Every structure is written in C-alpha cells, then in structure tokens.
Amino acid sequence: MINAVIINDIDTVVTVIKKVSLGENVSYVSSDGYSTIKATSDIPINHKVAIKQVKNGDEVLKYGERIGYATMDIHIGDHVHTNNLDS
Image (cartoon, rainbow, N blue to C red; front, side, top):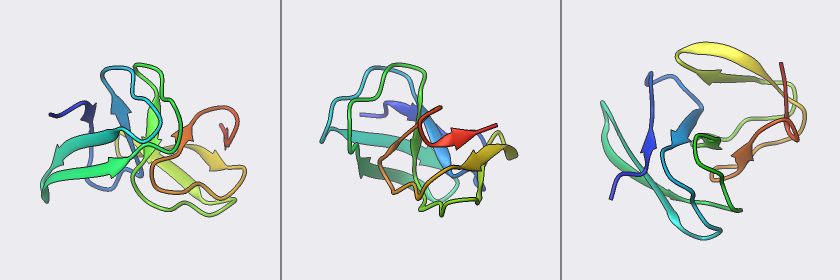
C-alpha cells in the first residue's frame, strides 16, 4: 500500500500521508517504479522520511529543491525533522 509521496526523483525524502510506526514499510512510486523502505522510528503524518543516505552537512532535497542541510548523518528510513535538519 502506498503511504508516502515523492515530488521529484532527485528528492532525498518522501512525505508520509498517514502515520507510520517503527519498522513499518514506507511505500511510494517514482519514475523508477514502486519502492519500499522500513521506518527506523515513528513518523507523524505529513512528515519526511529519508529515502537516500544523507551525510552530515549535505543538502536535503524535497520538491527538487534544497530544504536545508543535514545536521548529522541521516540514514534511509530515518525521520527527517528539526532534530537532524537545519534550514
């Protein structure tokens, strides 16, 4: 079941469209097809989840645009929010 949205194929995050629990699948469709990752924590509705590894200091991309910089290494499935993102 699809429960996340990706806006641009270069994005490093997706936005969940329902609450996702730790260990639950985060599924979305991009131009590459259907993809699924595992959430590494609880993710509130409308929040971001990393779909690519982002190193500390690297750009975080959503909408095909930089929305900020990682303040620590962010791993696939991690909740991306003010705890690890500086805009």
